[in-house]
Image (cartoon, rainbow, N blue to C red; front, side, top):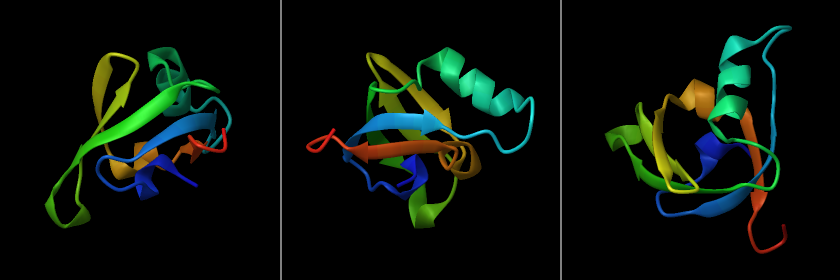
Length: 81
């Protein structure tokens, strides 16, 4: 499942960040920001009508991500993690 697919208020655990292409700077930046395997994430808010951005929380830090950026983060359900 992708982070971009989660509804507002949903919590999950990061499984991996997928690179769109070799030397993907956005994927590297997401990892640097804390989107790493095992880290808990929560969707705090979403733009109206499914638009950009979405507000996600990793640890105590919140980030505004575009849907195409959030789609690179693969997550798994927190209950089964």
